[in-house]
Image 1 (cartoon, rainbow, N blue to C red):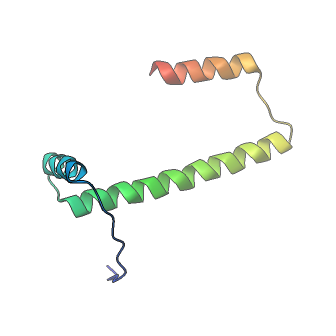
Image 2 (image 1 turned 90 degrees about the vertical axis):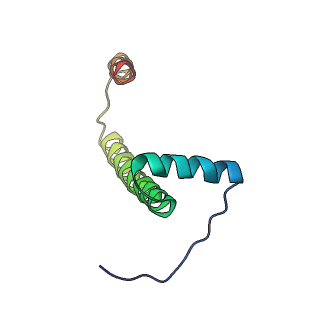
Length: 81
């Protein structure tokens, strides 16, 4: 595994530090790993979201749409989960 030396400092309030410590403890890890994992998940989610948007734009450019009622039903099913 590569060794990286670049550091990014993030400041939290004492209350936020306490919450992070509690969550990390419950997850069986330390705060550094908890925050790193959360940041990496955020980056992955952002990458996936942007890819989905690009796909949607491409589909729209090709005239591939669904009717509003079908979209409303799809969203309602997602919310009902």
